[in-house]
Image 1 (cartoon, rainbow, N blue to C red):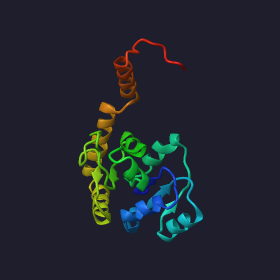
Image 2: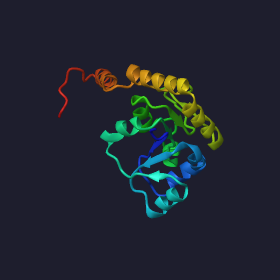
Image 3: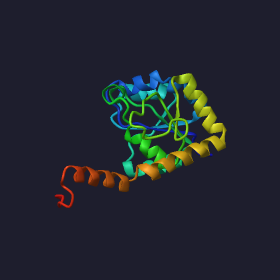
Image 4: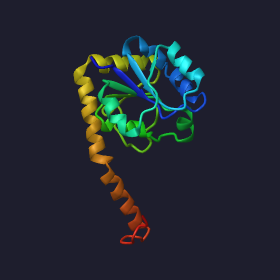
Length: 187
């Protein structure tokens, strides 16, 4: 049976990642989630804290390997670091896009989708605290129909609104509005 929970951090920056995990009470999930943690720049104190919490730290992985990591797990968590939450409120990190594009059920710590990029409750589940995160994770791990519905809806949203083709079309629209349509872009 494949591990149930995969967590990919965008890196360890000082104490912020552990604060985010602690704020979400994510360490409490380990009792039933069989978690695997990936990330970079984790200092020895953070690695010790992960070990003490029973979290399986598996180190850095290349961005190109992210889909294969998600494919080996049944769910993932999005726990943004405090700087993201404070400095970029309402902005999704790349991990949200990656998880949904890979068709893995996603459970998020609180964040406001200010741009309406995704459909909370359909594309991903949101948890306001550790107890709710545990409940949501149990729901996804124990209810295959729920997991399948989340994975399907999230992937559909990515395919409908967030592909490279969509970003190029947006860029071309910006160039048109700036009166630069038809101009050569420097390579």
